[in-house]
Length: 127
Image (tube, rainbow, N blue to C red; front, side, top):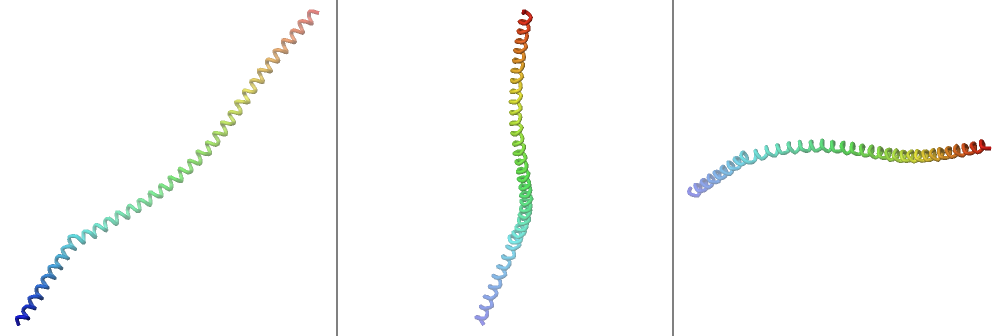
């Protein structure tokens, strides 16, 4: 009977230890586990929102890169046209310069001819 009693006490002690362990686990679940799961869910939602924001920002960045490439091509085309106009302007300036020199030579020649003509006319009048 004493052996049976010891067995019974040992069983009761195991049940008490198990009950304490179950209570400790339950307390840990309530105090640590559930808040941790809640926090994980909150962080996952934030992470999902950041990922969505990142996708949107990448789309915006791609759009801006495309726009920048387009502007750079336009700038390049405009620069080519500007350089072409500059060259054409320089050619026109040179042509104007050449024409002015030609006109000056023509006027000098005309003046010289007129002077020669007047001299000859004067000489002829003297005869």
